[in-house]
Structure formats: C-alpha cells, structure tokens
Image 1: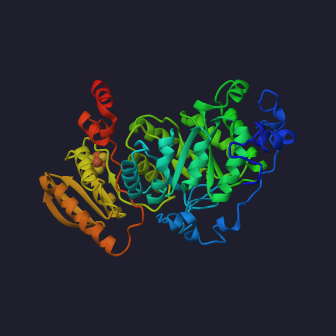
Image 2 (image 1 turned 90 degrees about the horizontal axis):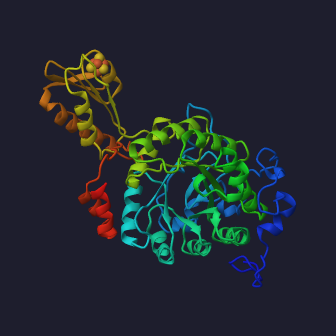
Length: 486
Ligand code: SF4
C-alpha cells in the first residue's frame, strides 16, 4: 500500500488518492456526467488488450507450482490442473489465465463449475456444510454473500476451512472487499455498478488484491447496470452490458491490474449469448458464464443449457455458474452435466433410455426414473440403457455398460451388448441396480472414477414445508409460512 493512500481511496483530505478518474481522463474520455463518450464506447473500442497473465510470476501457473500458493497451503482440493480441456466443437477462445486459489481459469484450463451458498454466511457451520456438499458434487469454486459486517467477520474461518476456493460476493460497501481479501478469500466478486465511490476505491482494491495474490471478478448484471449506461443505451442491451464491463476492465488495467475475469449476465438466454459473444470479441479476459435469475430448476436448467451450450460450442467461456431457484447442489450437478455432454469434462454416470412408444412392453418412464434415482449416488462413469422393447434395445444396450430390453413381461439384461440374464419384469430394477453397483465397484477399484465426480441430476420439483424447515431451520416461522402459503 503506497504511503499517503488509504483504503477508502482518499488521501485523507477527501480527494481521491490516485483514483480511476485521475488516471483515466485522457484515455477513457468519460463525459462530465460519468457516461462513456463515443470514443470509449464498445463500437469504437480499439484499445489494445494486453495478452497473457500480467500478475507476478509467482501467480503464473506455467512458472510456479500452484500447490505452493497460500490458498493451496490452506488445504484446497486440487482441481482442474491435469489437462487442457478441448472438445470436438469449436476450439476454445484464447483467454488469458488467472488463478482462483489453486484453480486456473482461462488460458485453456478446464472449465470450472461454480455455485453460491444460500445459507446465511454468518452461520459458519451451515455454510461450510453446504460448501462440502457442493465440493462433493463437483463444484470447483464457491461464492458466499457478504451483505453485512457479521458476514465479513465469518470469512476467515470459512476461507480457511473450505475444501474449495471461496469468492466473496460484495455489493455496495467497499470495506467488505478489503476485509474479504484480508480474510484469505481466493477471490472477490465486485459489481462496480453498485459499489459506492468505486472510481475512488478501485485502485486500492486492485493493489490489495495484487498484494494478496488473489483475483477479482467484474460482475455486470442487467439488473444493476450503471444508470448512465442504462440511459445511454436505453436498457440492459448487449451493447450496454459490454460497455459497462469494458469501462470497468479498463479501469483495472489502467492501474496495471490484470488478474480478473468478467461476467455479463442477463436472464434472457438470447441476450446473454449475444452479450458474451460481443464481449469475447473485445479482449482476452477470462469469462464467467451465467444466465442470471434463470428461474426454478426446470426452466433454469433449460435456459442454462441453451445459453451455455451455444457459447461453449463456440469456444467461449472459462468458468460457469448455473443459477437456479433450487438447492445449490443442483446447480453444480447441472453445470457438470453440461460440460460432460459437451465433451468438456470427463463423463460420469449416464443413463440412456428410450422415450417409449406404442411398442413399449413396460412402463419405460417409471423404469428409467427408478434406475436413475436408485443410482443417484454412483459416481463411476457407468452408462446404463433402459429400453422399452427389443426393437432398438439390444442395439442401444450394446453401446452401454449395462442395459435392459423389455418384452413379454420379462427383461433381458445386457452387459456390453451380451445377454447375461433374463428376469421377470418385477426384478428388472433390482437386478439393474445390483449389477450397476458391481460394475461401478470394479471401475472404482480400477481407478476409473474421476475426482469431483457427480451422480445423475435429480431435479427437485417441490419442497414440502417439513423439507424446507430441515434445510433452513434458522429461517424461522416466516419462511415456513411462506412455503406453506405458496
Ligand atoms: S426402444 Fe422400443 S419402446 Fe422404446 S421407443 Fe424404441 S421402439 Fe419404442
């Protein structure tokens, strides 16, 4: 921290110490009212974006062992370092690499999955318990909300005990950013649009992050867009969201800070895709993908699959967060499955089941659901086929590790395309489950279960008041009443 500079971004006299405005007047050409001029707009943005990680060499994963970082020393699970994830789809966009604790983001690193706890951060035990569940489901990075001083006070323990790197999510009060950095968080998400006096405190935030060796995320959201940019573009259009992101990115880079990623989230998948495409064309920042406020599990999953699928297929995206009005662990399962089905993460459990038709001689829907639910804790990369008749059954089952084709009140059980047993219809499910567990056990013995493997996605449709009470005992009667009234 340079002398004469305080963490509130002033020099003690109320004037900015060396704030953005002083640095940027010549280059970003902000209007007096704070809006971006045409010269700084995205249409005219010709600014050269520095390539490559610009942080200290100790944070360059190509020149330093990430296990030697402070965050690794705190016992983070090591993820995402083994291979560069590539796919048969469009080659990955070349982004620069940053580190979130020991997890590399960008620069060809495997695409990481993030989620956010929904426990009160002040409830340290509940938050750590939820983080452990998220990590077990395959989450690489977790974010926690810091809306109050009590939440900030909980960060040192949470950051120290979490098995995966913790990012503090800060709105409004910049003092919590500094507290999160001091607490040992692996990163901080800031939304410059609603951090008070961000122009003044921004340089101090960058210096504190650089000193601590952590990265930041600029998180632009349609719902909290800078009001001047909103007015200029007439709403949270792709151009407006990208203009906001560029403005903040250039602020960071003008003070020499480059260890940040960007998100430009929107609730509409089409707008979201257009926004990220536009942003991706403007520079090499690592991008955090998200469809914000995507809705309950069913709708949100579809929106996220559409938007993430479109972008990831084009090679855009370095880390993802699925946002669902559902338990956070379901976000992680959906995120992992999106990556698996795009060939961007090693496949885990998978089920193939036919849609059934007039030829079906068994209730395929019930059978498929029973098998999926019965194997929801399986993490081995086993593929199980459930077919309603023998028309396609044997053929599909040949592609699977295990399968069943039904007919005449019986089920033919296949292992790798060979019939091994024929069982009565009421024995199909128990036989499949038992055999699947035997095969999964052998895979585990052979070391074929990848780290962070998750079971199949089981989307909760409803939550009873009793279930809600069990999940949120601290929320009290108001929350329970709300569920009961819904
Ligand atoms: S496998 Fe048989 S029951 Fe299932 S959809 Fe195909 S033809 Fe219909």
